[in-house]
Length: 195
Image (cartoon, rainbow, N blue to C red; front, side, top):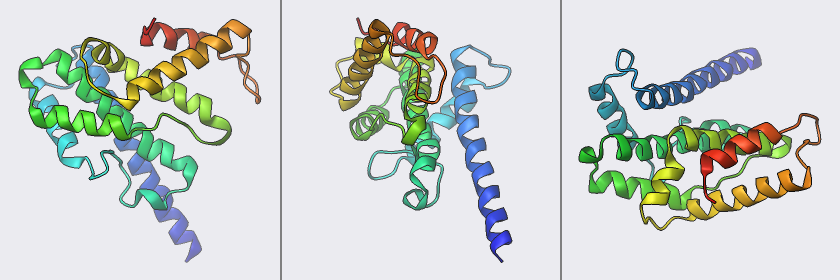
């Protein structure tokens, strides 16, 4: 029986990971104008599905029971889809401003206010970098910069910007388990463009 539970759980994780990957692919394809893969109509349906899927707390998740996930998996199946939903909405606001609605702005604001930009355990910096890259791919920092939206998320972006700049300035860019993160820190600082 334990093997069956393990198999079913693994299969569920594969489905959740595929959903997260599909969200990112959709966002990146529309950002690049690849209409042969995602038409504007499909994009509209995707955006509506995001609005429908936001929970009462303001988050998006691909897990049926998100709080039952171990903390390290909450980043992948709650934080990542949540970041992708916010980035997709920000991209939508920029590419299709005529489609912006009060509901979509409220969903963005609610999600941005509740979002906590953090990772878990020894992968926390890597996970934060991944979330920041999602935001950059969806042009979220640029949209926040040009629209006066009260957001705890904006404060968090500025805090991580400062943190990465300090790490670069001090040469503290090698993580405890190896790997120099200076190239990714530089790419993120350029993408955030908060200075």
